[in-house]
Length: 423
Image 1: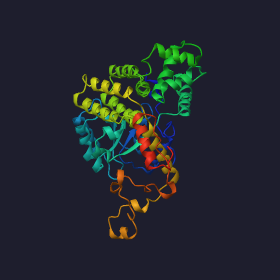
Image 2: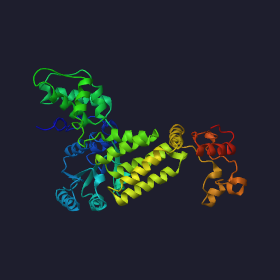
Image 3: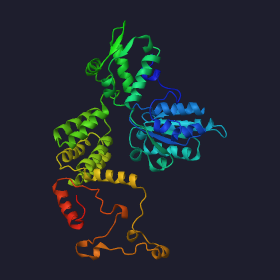
Image 4: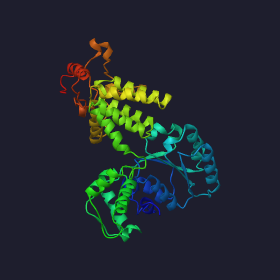
């Protein structure tokens, strides 16, 4: 018998749960589908949020041939064969056949190169699915030909709707008297992953007595999953929980815990580049200006891992992990850009002050562009007071330094330059 997740796979957009920002009436993907024509795109999101399902629904609704490839076991030859079959099945003035590539981030450069011509000429419409940031893993020429849509982890109400649908409509489960007395543990362990949630439900029902009602509560689910740690995770590890523990251990300045979680990821077969990317993010987000060398070291570890691979790659990863965990911490730059983005959303496109505008033409110069600009290097200490923010935001403070040696020094310098701005 098919797994529960497969039995419940929706076949229409009306049955599809979640991702309302993309598929609700009036949303961007829904409009494209309703128009009867879609362009190539990549779906980026965590596991179990409906990437494959959405691609299949689109092909079914557009009544176009649908071909699939898995990046795990397909080579350039397979890609070319599928493209040839798809091109031969195309009808005049109809939507191009859809080629769906799961885990497209695992495709090599040569495999991705083999897609370019077919995508550019419209011989196929490419739909890629990835759990990794496409800007890191998809070659630039292919990425420029595809829109990227971000899928989110399913929200609580989405997951509850899915549970209700499962116990009331599934051909197997609806024959059982299932009472979802408590759902908090199921939702927590699923982590917004529909496939994982249905796996937990399937496990709970299978573990109950074959006759009589099935009562599911938090204690039952927790006990089952502690006894069967692999039952709800195909990879054998709670992937996102482990990396979360890794990053939080670095942020919390615990090198011992950070090394432990690093070892768990290595033993679990994690992609070393995935780990290295998280270290780069941590260096920028959590160490930041307290120790700018952290970002340099994390980038160096990324480069080293890409060059040497496993097993030696564990050494630069461990070095970067310990360095980041034992470094002073600051999130002032991370918070500063967050405040700045919020301010931009609130205030809109405020004009650039005339003195700091570019004046490449005589007309611009005549209009006062660049007029009155003060060149800081002409003054003692290479600084002279001048307004750089829009008039409406003059003296706004967006960067608030954290308490560490490097930023204490920067704070003193800023206080001397801009005494009217209280940090």
